[in-house]
Every structure is written in structure tokens, then in C-alpha cells.
Image (cartoon, rainbow, N blue to C red; front, side, top):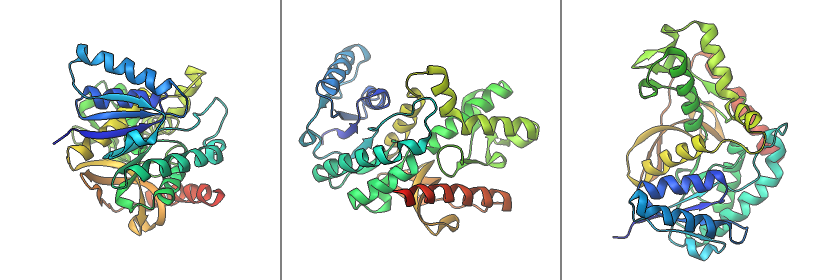
Length: 307
């Protein structure tokens, strides 16, 4: 029994930090892949040299050759252009679609049984590209967005109420970005809905801040975009799959009639385990929530049509 193997495509900030978390948790050997010569090798070596201090024995290598990724259990796709200030997610669409298509084809040729975790933006559209490029069933193509949006929402709830983030839970549906659909009545502090703990105005302010969470960080950094929380969120999905934990996490998956949507990747709560997406958890939405969810699905459909 060898260790699990995870390939992370894209050795930028998100990819390298994801690789670091996976290796340092002793979860899997990691292969960091990038098109730039020397970049993944350098980051891989740097991460490997931290291992004696951190105290793990996971192997980390960097490469430009997909042959090194053969037999991966999970392939995480982070490659693509990051948002610059003033850029919409849609500006990224055509460029990143081409990148995601080529890297997914290269990776699945060497790891035909892998589970794909897509992180590249615009997230929901890139999942469609990855599914088409791989030919995989929907159980094995997952988008990372909802975990990050929930993490942001949970952070803001904890800040607002002065409570531990561990006691906050957030329920987020829909596309990643401006059309996300947080459900405050299912978002709780130690089981108490936040609607019982703050005014509707404060709830709405936190919802708005969550939807714009990525843009807020881009505006502050001025060069580059968020990566600590995205990497942590990606790690949580990888951990749930490799340890077969049956975690209930919001992920972008291809809906086949659930929530009244057919044939689109939209964020919904799913059970994540060794098989990837093991089932979609469907809840009854109020009319307002359902309308917001359909708007979110509509925004994804527009992007997919542009592709």
C-alpha cells in the first residue's frame, strides 16, 4: 500500500499552497505541474526541504512532464490567469478555457481513474470545460467554490458576533461570485440560525461582503488574488475524498434535475467520499431562494453558451 498521489496543476500561489497543505498533513505524495520550466521544480524542492522540520514523509516533486503524474488519485486544476483589478471573471473565460482543456486532457491520459477538482475561474464554466475534455462522469468532476464562499461567510459571521469560527456554519448555493446564494436561515452559530442573532440589514451586509470576497482581496493586494483560503478550501475537499469522510460540503457539480436545473454545473451541498461526489443533498427552497438560485444557474448558462 503506497501513499495516495495528488497532482496539482499550476504552481502559482493557490497550487503551491494547496500542495503544501496536502503534503504537510501527510495525506498524499504531491506532484506539482506547471508549463514554466523550473517553477514547479523549485517550489517542489523548497517544499521538500521543509519536510524534516514539519515532520512529514510525503514526497513532493515539481515537473513540466505529465508522465510524472501517472496514477494520481486526484488531479487539482489551478492553472490559468488570475483576476487583475478591473477584470471581470468573464474576461478570463476564453483564455482559461483553452488552458483548462489542454491540461485536463494531458492529465487524464495518465490518470484515467482520477477525480478532478477544478479551482480555475470562472469556476462553474471551467467545470464544463473539464468534464468535456475528460469525458468523466459527474461524480468525478468537482468545482471548488462553495467551500471558499462558506469559509468567507463563516469568518464574517464570527467577526460580527464575536464568536468562534468553529461554531459558525454557513449554507451557500449557486455560482461562484456575484450570483452566489447564501441561505441565512440555514446559516448558524452553534445551531442557532443567524437570522435569530442579527438584524436583516446586518445579515444582508455579510451576504454582500461574502459575494464580493474575492474582489475585496484583489483590491487590497493590487497584484494577485486570494490564495490562503482557496488553498485551504481545496485541501478540505481533497481530504474528504482521500479519507472517504463523507463530508457534506458545497461543491459545483453537474446537476441532473436537482433544484430544477439540468445539465449545468452549479454549487450545491454534496456528500464527498472516496467515489468523489456520492450524492447531492437537495433541500426545499423558499420562492425567493429558488428565484435567486435560478438566476445563478442562468448566469452559468450564459458563460457556457459563450464557450
